[in-house]
Length: 313
Image 1 (tube, rainbow, N blue to C red):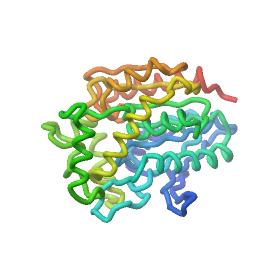
Image 2: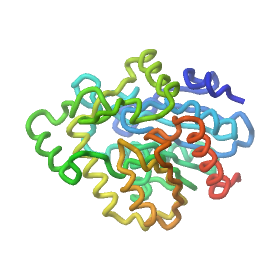
Image 3: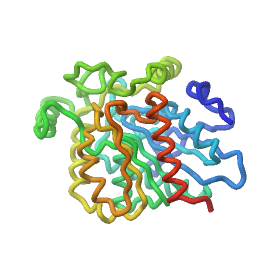
């Protein structure tokens, strides 16, 4: 059994961190942790949010690994250990979210062909958005999927004017420049830690990794990333989500200060095989890195869903 508290700040000795090469030659940093049991319970691909690295979820990986799952993940192109797409310091940039989808689809095909099923894909925040979009576009076809605080809308004091304002500001200079400084979002009176989790120790783990491996740090998004995000979120909600047949579990934090939970609550009923678990003010954005009562409830919900919808083969 993994020592979960210690695992938060250490890559497991049995895990492998290397590079996976995309079709255009871009190197994406990859994590793989094979199951110790044989046969494995199944194989799980976990994708993080904007600016994240997979190290932030080692504790959760340890929980699922103890259940017998093979675990895999990769840093999204342009962030973490997967390089940068702009010369503006450590800014997170992308031209079009279709680029992310192409990486996910190619990685998924290779991963699914080389690992035992059932195959489960999970995504947190931006990762949740991209997993749902990939399902809607039939770019991936897992046995089940889990979306955790999915970025299906973003909170902004500008409301519906946020996207037009971003387009205007992007045209005023280099669209690859950072959209703001330092914090997770501009114009906020909340600290970054309060936006992410109520658990100070788990938040400190992220700071520890940033200090231990500063090259992995990804700062604010670029204006180009913001425009791509607004376009992708609008297209996804307007698209044929009703055609997503894969069993889906959505974990939504209604008090989320980063993503707009209302978007997830609008979309969830449109999914033909979707289940929704809601959290109140007890949870900030990072549900799996929250205080134990929230985190344990989330893990229990995921485990029950997988037992029912991704049964051991």
